Amino acid sequence: MPLRKRGYMDRKLDGWGSGLLGVIIFSGSLPATRVAVGDFSPLFLTSARAAIAALLGAAFLALLRQAKPARKDLGALVMVALGVVIGFPLLTALALQHITSARALVFIGLLPLATALFAVLRGGERPKPAFWPFALLGAMAVAGYALSGGAPAAPTGDLLMVAAILLCGLGYAEGATLSRRLGGWQVISWALLLALPIMAVVALATLPESWGRIGVPAWLGLAYVSIFSMLIGFVFWYRGLALGGIAGVGQLQLLQPFFGLTLAGLLLREPIAWTMVAATGLVVLCVAGAKRYA
Image (cartoon, rainbow, N blue to C red; front, side):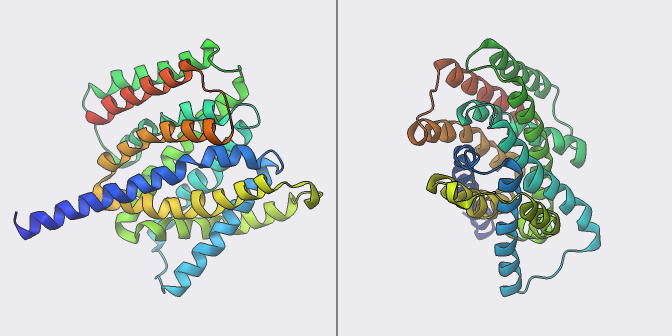
């Protein structure tokens, strides 16, 4: 194999490996959030996790002497911050007060599709016509499950999850594009720093009234979503997208519901009905078909 070809394949494999590790890390986010919101308010959890991750990101940027992003990149960084730093964590924390993490993970199956849709809207991509039937069928599968009684009905939680997925898809698409110029971990670090002033104020304003009632599981959940979900996961995820390609590595998100459902069942003892598994499987197949023609 020519050296140039071997180097290209090595980068692709490295990208897939990094992307898979990012997905595995993200899979623990909803179960950890579910535990944390038992003792912390959603606003405090969202702002605290972002502030903690921002301080860690700032330390990395300073120690490695990273150049500031160009003025033209600030708009995209703001969208990343609104999507994955503020919007998705807050909306999922609010949703998990109404639904189980297992039910929320069914909606995560639509995340690759949301990312692809924003690639069309923001990146000017034009998928083949066969893309849209898969996209519609996937959306219908999620809607049908939500209305079928496969888990305790909670329209508020379901709507919050839909909004969270849309914002996260926007943040992924913008961040993936930026990572090719700035680097994967730099993108999430700068986005966290942009959101830090607001997140710090919100965290201080929503401090728990009594720290004594905060249990160890809630502290562990906060630590996980702050360090792993908000920072380390994105380091591997954006690196994977940059090296392996957005369309290819993005399909690894299809594994996230299965990893997450397993964690929810093993760690939280949440019931996982067969209809929930079937809905997740159908969503995965629909999104896989849609990504094939994207």
